[in-house]
Length: 149
Image (cartoon, rainbow, N blue to C red):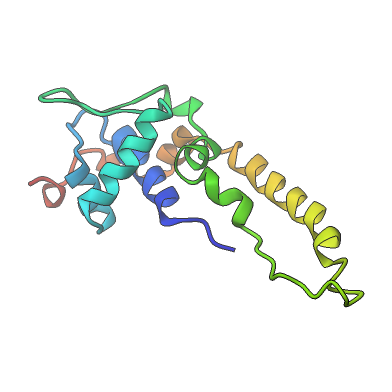
């Protein structure tokens, strides 16, 4: 089971914007925090913006969350950046339909896999960006120099 890395990049991005809410956050700052290429972050910025989860700052404007942090769930982020991968979480091989097991395995497992995916999405819907921000060390809310360019 594998969800694409853009999902965690999306969560990380929203956490940086929410946590350092008094600072101008750029894709370069987020990329430095993550340890990845800014192009990856810019691609995720675009997806988060289209989903109205992020409002990138233009010029001197600061990047802001698209709605309050307590209204953005981990499921919202998943839906914005990786929703296409939900159907591919459980992949099955093509089967030999002449085998009594092979001919039935997809039907046997599909409904169970659907239940597992729905359960996972339900759990992701219970945690918000605000929940995660509240667990970060609040005394460190000043953007560190190492992230500034």
